[in-house]
Image: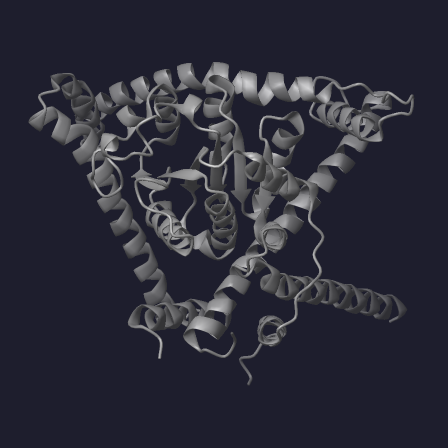
Length: 270
Length: 205
C-alpha cells in the first residue's frame, strides 16, 4: 500500500464510477442537437438509391469513439436504401471501415457491388481527393479486394463527385479540412462529418460558414443519432458513463480547489 | 467463452491500463506490440496500395514509362543516408514543396480565409429590427482577437483594451477545446471499459 499515490486513488475512483454505471441499464434522455438533426435530415431527405461516399479518415486508436458514429451513419444510410462507396485516406482506417460497412450492410441485407462498394486506401490524401474530383475510377481502378472498378453495378454511373450526393468524412483529426478545401471548395461536393469530440472546435467555424454541411460529434452525437434512427449502437449507454465521468472530474476539481484554499488559509494564519 | 481475438484484445487493454499504476514490463510489451503492429500494417498497406498499385505494376507490367520520373525522384530521397549524396534529396523535396504549395495556396486562401471572412461579415440586425446577438459576438470576437495578435504597436489604450477582450475570447476557445478533448478521451476510455465488461468479461449485456 505504501506505493499507492493520490493519482492511483483518482484513477481507481474513475474505474469504479464508470464500471458501476455501465453495469446499470439506465439510459439518459438526451436532447438532439441542431447539428445532428441537420445531418439526419439530410441523409433522410435524399431519394433512395442516392450515392454517398463515406471516407474513413481515422486511426485505430480512436475506434471506441469513432465506431458508434460510423455505425449510426451507415445504418441510417443503408436503412434509407442509399448506395455507399467506402474509401479510407488513412491507412489504419482501411480495415476498420471495411468491417463496419460489411457489418451494417449484412444487417440490412445489402449486397456488395449493388448497394455498397469499398474502394480501400489511397495514400497522399490531398492528391487522392483532387484525383477523385477528376475521376474516381482512375483514382481507384480496383476495389479493396482487387476487383476492377467497372465490374460493379453501383459504380457504373459514378465517375466523379458530380455523381455523389455527399462525402461523409468519419474522422479523428483534421483530414476533413482537406475534404472541404479540395473536394468542397474546388469541386463543389457537399461535405458532412462524423468526428471525435476533440475536433468540434476546429470544425464548428466551417459549419457556421457553410463550408461543412453538418457534423455529428463524439459519443454524444452518436447517442443523439441513435435516438433519431431508433437503433442502439452503444452511444446512449455510454452517455450515462460519460456524464458520471464528467461529474467525477468536476467533483475532483472542486475538491482540489477546496484543499488548496484551505491549505492557503492555514499557511497565512500560521 | 470469448473468441481468441477478444481474449487477446482484452488482455492487451488491461496491459495498457496497467500503466496507470506505474510503468512496468507488461505495459512496455503491449506498447511495443502496438507500435510494431501499426508500423507493419501501414507498411503492408503502403506497399500494396502505393508502391505496387501506383508504381511497380503500371511501370513494369503496363509499360507506363513516365512513372520512371517519380521512381527516380523517390530514390533520390534515399540520398540523405550518405553525406556525399545528401544534397540530391533536395530535388524531390523541392518538387514536393513547390507542387504542394502551388496546389494548396489558392485553395487554402479561398477556403480558410475568404470564405471564413465572408461568413463573419453578416448583418448585425435581423429582419425584425432586433440586433443579431450571435453576429455581434462573432464580429466582436474576430476583431478583438485579431487586435491581440497585432504586435506593431504597444498594447495600450484602446488597442490594449481590445486585446484584453481578445484574450477572453481566446480563453473561452481554449476552455471549450479542452472540455471537448476531455470528453473525447473519456469516450475512448468508456469504449474500452464497455469492451472489457461486455465482450471480454461478459459482465454486462
